Image 1 (cartoon, one colour):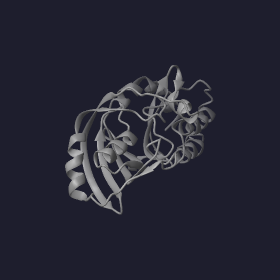
Image 2: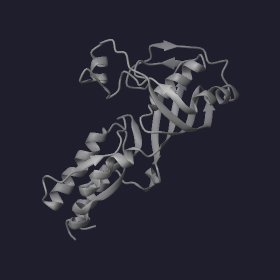
Image 3: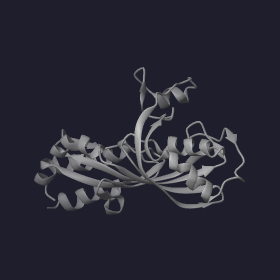
Image 4: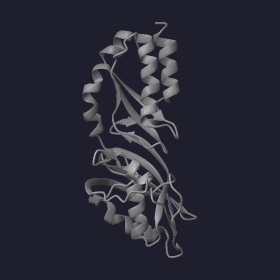
Length: 234
């Protein structure tokens, strides 16, 4: 890859690490690209945010490819989600502490299989209050962290496929193929409610976006080093 190739436009498959924000991944790669190209106004952006506690595929577009970001965002997303049944958290994941606990003795793989049937197809979903959606011009998570009471409007999303990968010791592993705008945290919360056990997300990995796989990606540090080593010396 040459400097000319970068400016002409590139699509980078980034395997985002745990606790990195999507913005941090973009910033790391953008800094390296600007350094090797000498173009301070080089456009770099991502096609679909991943939460800091999630890992996996983040598509980053560079140069003229940034014009196609909305096309990539519209592609279906595939995840592997780990849901802990028997307890809930306000954020629907590990960002906040458990606020309620429930029995799980009535749950087995068969009851889960039957319950998740209602979550396939077009469904109405309420996003978490700990999300980046703006309420009155302010990110909802900022209001939530300040203790403000927030009411999130439901939205229509599509769950194309739901597959149980495993269930043991109240830990449910699911493969989810869904439309853009789907919050897996909300799905975890809603499945927990439907099972009368509560539930929250304890692990999430995005393994695929459309035809693009996380397994084909590099971490943001790897991409940055690649550009500094390979492109700069080309």
